[in-house]
Length: 167
Image 1 (spheres, helix red, strand yellow):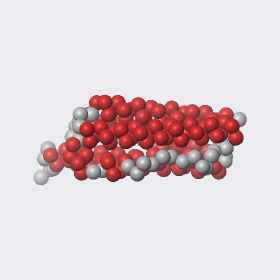
Image 2 (tube, rainbow, N blue to C red):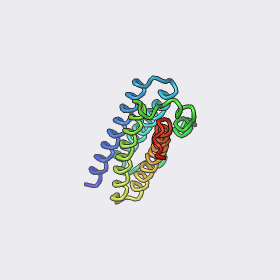
Image 3 (cartoon, one colour):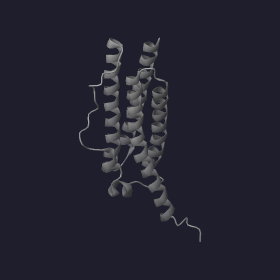
Image 4 (cartoon, one colour):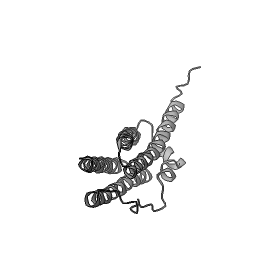
């Protein structure tokens, strides 16, 4: 029974990541600035890496009843933090723009992923599975932290640009 539950959780995780990729690709299509498009494309590519990673783990679990510790995520050296938190990007996104709304929505999406992976890690009966889901939750927490920081800076920018400070 545990095997069937684990495979179902992996299917849900794959679907969650595919939805994330679709969301970020939509943001790429609707963003006007090339640098902002690149940020959303990097996020979409990372979600795609997650799908491949989860699919390989699904296959391993389906065939052997365990996760493959040798399967790792790709990292081409370009980090989301490097792109998202650059001053150039922050200056190109208006706090009231489509891109800012997409960032706020992405924060919610990352929160759901963190909750799903953390819950599965907490309830896992197998130590390898627990570590696997804990690692995924931490990966998503990294995305959340970056997006949250950017969102906070955008809010501060609009606050300052519109002189909302009480005197």
